[in-house]
Length: 138
Image (tube, rainbow, N blue to C red; front, side, top):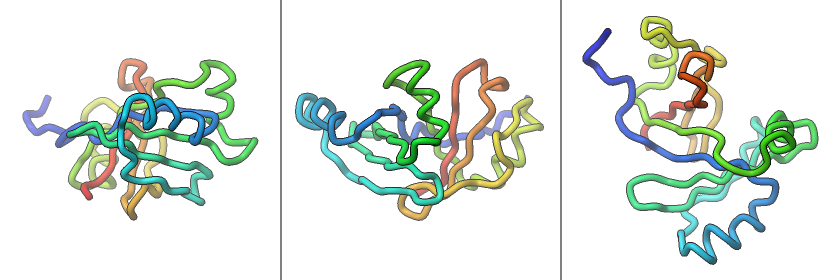
């Protein structure tokens, strides 16, 4: 057990959607959440749109290819909550530290995230069934 937190704060809550523009009709137009970022991540074949909710963002995640793994998630679960993302000082270092905390990464190599940041997913089998992601600071 350690007294040093792995994460600094909650960065965003991710919701997987079939169509970002359709989803924005609810999140932006009905709820009034302002869009602060909308970016396609070619290496991940996703469109990510961040809406400001004060001290945390709501991230809409739209798969851009028919064979994207998130389409299986959408087929099985429909649109909705996908993961929680926490901010850490150094993603690669935090991924390497996971085994010492009884967790494992989905991949040991961080993936591309918006605004040039890196991120990495933690295997939900080691986080009590919740999909967690880590990202670096802005």
